[in-house]
Image (cartoon, rainbow, N blue to C red; front, side):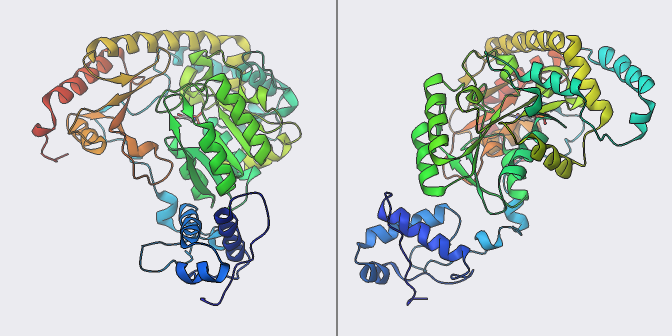
Length: 470
Ligand SMILES: Cc1ncc(COP(=O)(O)O)c(C=O)c1O
């Protein structure tokens, strides 16, 4: 391959980025096949009349894009998961990330779930299901083929906030917020496209994106959320088609994105033509008054939300509010990725919202979360963590020498299931945060208090007492 020379397109970007783009185009066009070796940096620098540093930066960018292998001194090779192969990603690639067991072992305290706490929702949901079944025998026996206006109206009511009000025509009812986000990714991007996530994210969605052949890239964040400059860098260098964000309450860091950053992000997304998913599952609970991204970039923002965190996760109610003219595409994609809406769940979700029962339950859930968060602040007062009175988890800093995974294993040995930081990494990262997420919305308040105490004594006993058994 040493004779091959890339065709560099003239443009505004730095030379190394245009060189990386040219190599990527050659991969896309099949000129460079998986396994092909790129020219040694020194030779290419000579042939192109640039410094070896410029070639090094281009190759580093290609490594970051996941297109080439790169062990220094061993040559740079085109990888198999290049764009041409992205419609059949390797299993290991798809399943990367995620450290939570799919089936929680019995007898453990679940402090790894953020679903709404059990406050007797069954007393509302049970009779509602019976009523729906009685009134709609045909729909219960059948597939759901229409989206009732009441379902759209419920989405408008549930998602509309802070002066932003979606149109019923742009609303698509979904099988929860996760299914909504996945349908957006499937509808608006193609296999091999890049989807951008914050370095720490709700990683089940980044893993779902990889499962359907999208490549994920990560963007830097700080205590306020996504850093706009890094979003711009990623847009310029990696050309993502879509970015997934949680501005109203970030899981797991609890950051709430300030208005000036939202404005910058809307502007960058517009300049680089990137779709945005604004995950609002916690929007209604934090009551964050900042304008939604959807009101700053309505032509490109999909707002996803639902009932799981604030009302009842078992009902799986969700909605996506689309930019104009794409709702039909979303409906089809949601049907293809989920098999279609369940009539009883969609109808129950809509009735809960339109009757006001959902808002009432949300108030009770928010009150319970606030009480538990107050207890966490008392019990763990000696320890460093971030929390919010209306978010059902805290982001706990571990004292040295604890590592995130080791602490999670030690807590599991004490019968408490929590999440380590790797659960939230959008990609393999070199960086460590030395934090764990402690969620506190499951079971009853007394059990959660006992869980906080167990976490506290583990922190106080120090890592020396932990011998690695689980
Ligand atoms: C940020 C975020 N978005 C979406 C979801 C999934 O929501 P749903 O249960 O409505 O699918 C979760 C669940 O943990 C979440 O934390």
